[in-house]
Length: 202
Length: 167
Image 1 (cartoon, rainbow over the protein chains, first blue to last red):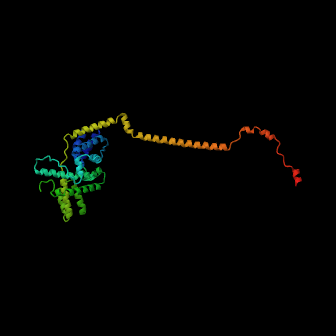
Image 2: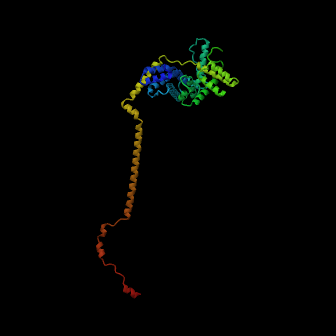
Image 3: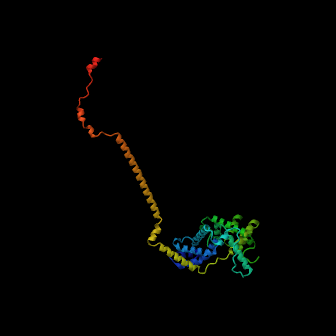
């Protein structure tokens, strides 16, 4: 059975020949990590799906540019990075956009309270939802490059060298971005770090 | 390998995922006696667990189908745009304004050159006209009586006898 990277390259070679089924398989394989990255980069789950879809559309349109010698995941996440940054630039030129994105970027601003989907669930789920929201908010307030580095770091498919390639900087610069991002998060999430992770035990 | 370097490696490893029990034990053993590093390690571990606990963002159940359709539509649109004269235009449209600008520059250069040449010719003509007026050669009419004048008695020479008598 081929290892993941070889399977990706083989699928892309079929996509280059117009094989939609191969393309669908790649989309299925990477839609979740791409959605996670895009949604947290933009702090806008509603818009994230359109952008994530665009990432794969770009892959299909420009499949002829893909070189089998390169790792597909590096290429894929580079496209995702570019589209995310384009969207963030577009929003900065037109500030009257997503309220979630706006509120997340204003320090000290109290975010809009979102109704918990499990409102009738036990308190532990409410606490968990609250903690999720705090972590997401803290991530959204990081500078773009630190946020991107931190989110890429969560992708098991990418080594530090591949992350650096996606970010367009050196490995040491990539690690520096991750370190600075994490230091900021540790400060912002200090109360939650004391209680530990998602464990329900206190 | 010193403790700082070892700690850096352990920390970078756990940026990707929570440490295993063995890694955690090794870290504690290495960091014993360095309370500031121990505190940082605990904070790093807690943060990694927090980040790892974030749920996946929801993806629509028909995301793949919609994406494949969108991609095929986009590629078909690209192909239509690249057909026939449209293809030629898409490939060469950037050259047209450059050619137009180059033609403009050449025309302007030719016009300027022609103007300069014209001015030089004008100055030359004016100069020649001035010289021609100053050094006008008499016309052939003035030479009509040339033979008659030449036939006139030549100027008498000096009276030598008179000159001797006057001395």
